Structure formats: C-alpha cells, structure tokens
Length: 465
Image (cartoon, rainbow, N blue to C red; front, top):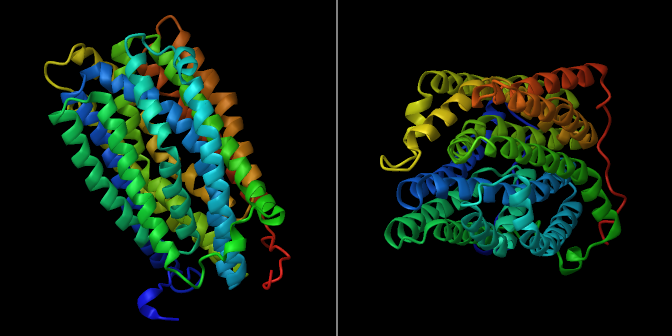
C-alpha cells in the first residue's frame, strides 16, 4: 500500500480515558454541527435583512419544514450506518466494514432519488395543510423545489458523515463542513444581498455548498483503500440491507414522527398570523443552534457505544454516559439563562429595522422562546440516552419512547395550549419541555430494567464473500 495514495480514517474509541476520548471525539462534531447551524442562521439573517423581511423568513421556515421532514427520514436511517460500521470496527472485521459502507452508499443514493420527486409534487398541499400564510406560499415552494432538486447531494454528505462517525473519525467531517459553510455564507451574501435573488438565492446557496461537502467526503473515503468497498459490495445484498433496515427504520420513523409533530406546531402557530410564523421560524433556527451540544454528544455516544460493544466492553460504554450527559447539560444551562434574559434583543437582531411587522415578530418569538428554552436543560438527557440505546442497536425502544411522548404529550399539549381562550406563544412553548420530561422518565426506567443488555449482532458473512 502506497502511503501517498491511501489514508486510514479509523479511530479506535475503545481505549484511553473515557472522558477525554468522549470530549476529543465529540468536539469536532460540535464544531461541525455548529457550522451547519450557523449557515442556516445566516440564511435567515440575510433573508431577514436583505431578502424579504418577515415574509422571506416565514417562507424559509415553512418550506424548510418539508425539507427537514425528508431529511429526518434519511438521517434517521443513517444511524444504521454509524452503528454497523462502528460495531464492525470494534470487532476488527475489515471485510464487514467494507460491505456495510458499500451497501449504505448505494441504498441512500437510490432512496434519496426516489423520495425527492414525490416530495416536490406534494409540497403545495403540505404548505396548505400547515396553514402557511398565503402570501408566503410562492416563496416557500421555490425554496423547497430548489433544495429537493439537489437533495441527493444534501443527503450524500450526511451518509458519508455517518460512515465516518462509525469509523471513529470526527475531525475530517469538520473540515468539509467548514469549507461548505464558507461557500454558503459567501453565496448567501452574493445571491441575496447583492443580486437580490431572495429565497431562491438561499436555496441555491444551500444546494451548492452541501454538494461541495458531499464530493469532498466521497473523495476522502475513496482514498481509504483499506476500508473502501469492492465493486460487488455496492450491490444491495439482502443480509446487509436487512441490518440497515432493522436498525435504521425505527429511528427514521421516529424522526419523521417528530418532524410531523413540529409541522403540527407550525400549523397552530400559523393561525396566529404572519408575525407569529416569522417569530417561530427565527426561534426554530436558534433552537437548532442551542441543541447542538446535546446532538453532538448523542452522535458521539452512538459511535462510542457501538465500538465498545463490538469490542465486548459494555461497562466502558455505560460509564461514558455520565460525561456524555454532563457536558451538554452545562451548555444548555448557559443557553437557558441567555434566552431568559435577552429574548427580544436576540430575535430583533435577525430583522431589518424597517421590516413590516418587526415589533410583532419580535414579541411573538420572544414569548415562545421564554417558555420553550427550559427544553435546553432537558434535551441533553433525552438525546444522549437515545444515542446510547441506538449504539446498542435497540432503536425500537428509542422510537417507541420518543413517538409515545410526542403524540401522547407534545402534540395534544400544543393543541390544547394553542386553542385555549387565552392562548399565546408563551403558553404553546411549554409543550416541548413537558414531552421531554416524560421521555426522560421512560428512558430511565428502561435503563434500570436492563432490557438493552446483550451482544451486538454480527452478520454471518464470509470474509471472502
């Protein structure tokens, strides 16, 4: 093997200090997720300042719900990529690593192509279902159609990032995301602020920047000769495909259900008018940022758990839970304090001083974030425990817990709080923290009962196959 033409992206997560290993592995994910969330916020910021004010912000917010729904389905499935690759890396089975990478790439390219076209056709109806303000729908459709036109690139990067997580490699995706972030911000400014392309410019910037990240990740993995699949590994063989579906489908179903619940929240909020829709859209982008520590440590927990179980070291995986929850919890506490003290200042920063309905948008967004922000200290427990159970392969429980709490608590609470005679954006915001409290209780009971114990499944595939 020629070192100049090959790389080794594998990082062993089964040795060394637990806390240091977790932190070293999770921090690049945190930075990468921060950059992704940052350029999502830049979209909203530049649109709010230069590309349509509250109307443009609401268009990206409502249209983005459709894109997020489809993306959640796919990203939920990519959990299987991380878990399978991580398990085989921990077991030191290079041949199964190759097979899992090959089948994952083929599967997700096919699915992304098959799902984007129906989503484009259904987009107008979905926007009506969630009570999108009529004046917002044309721009929202433009945003959705352009983004879904390049969905294979958006999805491609997420698949490659999931594979790299399973390999224990969190630094390389950071480089790709940083590159995409710089491109996205530059294109946003050029297309929206300079050329006045509005929402269309934001969508084009997103597709082009994600496409660059996808191609960079593909080129990087293709150079890893030791784990890059052989040609026959790209065939959708039944045994590996069944494992992907077994692990990934429950998480995909859970993610879709959660996004459907948030679309329902949009439908309730939209009934309060354009200002409420725009304020909620801004808060949603802010929430994506504030949830990053919990999300990043959850992703790290899945990969670390899978590798350690693959290596037969369950106690080490369990001990990682404590720092895995503690780190993002302290971050959540800081975000909670900031949002309680400065909500209007933060919301107002995203809107031009001359924006129509600016003050109403700021008030609506500030009211919602004041109550919702209690979620910031609850989500770390929910996300990191989900990451642990996903890493053990018990994704059915994760789906059951989250769907139950979403549709038994969050959706009914949103409806009741939103339809009450004295309903405000402040009262609606409490629905999410209530659901998270219930989810934490169910997860703690499941962990205590120990139903998640057991060795990970290893496919009975000959290394010569």
